[in-house]
Amino acid sequence: MIKTFSSRAGRLSATNKKFLQSKSKSILKIGEKPSTTKPLIVDIGFGDAQSFVCDVVENKDYVFIGIEPYKKGFARAVQFYEENMPKNMFLFNGDAREFLAEIKYKIDFIRIHFPDPWPKKKHAKRRLVTKDFLLTSHSILKKGGSIEIITDSSIYQQHLEELISHQNYFKQIKKFPFTYQISTFHKKALDKGHTIKEYVLERTN
Image (cartoon, rainbow, N blue to C red; front, side, top):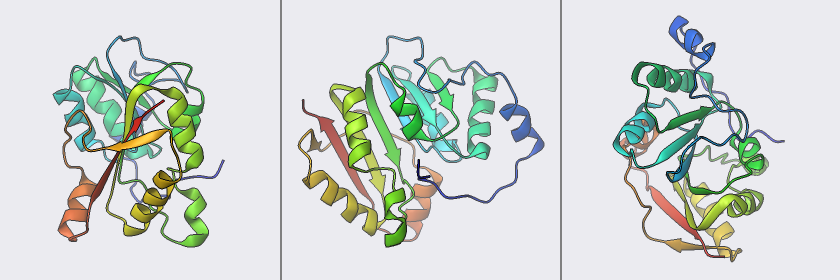
């Protein structure tokens, strides 16, 4: 499977290593379903976890499955769980596509904020959101479930708009059902004056 994420700088601290090695109850096996009857949100790529954990706290009526391939951000999320024990937060450290491919249950929402745009043409196949990704998402989302994608990359925006226009199993809607804290990547995009676009796709059939 082609990797959809690039390496990021940042050494692991002793605290990071401690929580990476912990046997936290928040950590899911690949495709594992949390024990809950609440709506499920798969949050892909929560980065440094700062905004993600705020969203978990502020949306207690939802259960979050946070997926992050980078160990530093994942370790911070595990640390937050161990220190606060939120009942609506679960985590997976790895490739989101591999996790979604193993899901044997239905979920309500998928959230992707600022995915790696892979702007060079030779790297376009590495992008997370593809036709195959939408097909997988369609198969695991409940009818009426939705995907939220936010990006400041004009190249990725064009990619998404072309992708959306050539499929008929999602329709674009205006609003995702809950708000979110602005992340570190979001703040950087705002500071640079980038045009940020949100795409919300609802499963139609």
